[in-house]
Length: 91
Image (tube, rainbow, N blue to C red):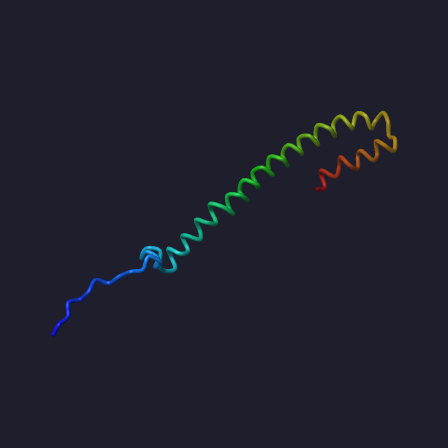
């Protein structure tokens, strides 16, 4: 007495077959990393590079003007300003 076989049922909570296994799971995690964390840090790096480049240009410009003024006046204020300005080079 053979019984007819019933079609197998799958639960709606079971993940689809294509997302099971280590490779699809790794790909899904990689997408999450790329779409959120990595894109944030890549954009932040780009913005910070522009900031550093702009700050360096400003420093060069101000330093050339200051060299002219330092030759004429070497007060305590000018010395303090030179320290503040040169911190850009050290930072």
